Image (cartoon, rainbow, N blue to C red; front, side):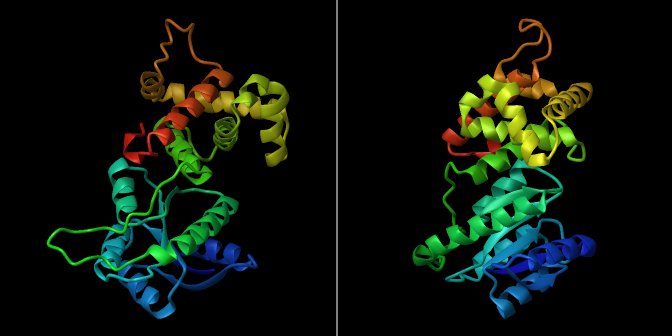
Length: 274
């Protein structure tokens, strides 16, 4: 898989370059630090996948994608959009312009490699059906079908965590995110939260179930203190007065998993997120 990294943060680019270079099935064919350079590198290097930051000098990520659409490439590279901010309008626009997925910074490198592989596989499946954009007075886009996949679930959970104000730099963020994803995959896990769910999260992060439970509780308390949980309550129909105060870890995880499950069932409409 030929990967092109496009981001104006040179330190960030360097860390991704170093990590991806250690993957046997990937080759970083180049890097670009602004939008115009990105377009030149795409033409010169023909990458399979590009990691594209939204905010860049000269031409931003959305502008790069618009130029790709206008170029009417018959086999354009798959785009993974990277951003430190999450805005529904921006995400919707990126998806409409053909982005295969959206990743909110910061993220784990292991997750990035999984996204690159799944995006590459999806691109290869779509190759036979990719056609030049028809000429018309009306702008047309190459729309990548969005399906109910684990990849979409990860995007939805990440956006939810960001929306309710849980900082990405605390351990509870990763633990809670992982727990919600596990329950989305298997509803039964919420029935064994202390015997199955917490141990599963703890095993992956090489810690203990007790630390996982405490860290998740702390993450939720942080969200409460910031006054951001009311959005979640409204979406889930949970009332703190009628439901005996703040939800427990298990209640929150169960409600979050069900909320995202419904979002995905409705077509994964990212613009409908909190």
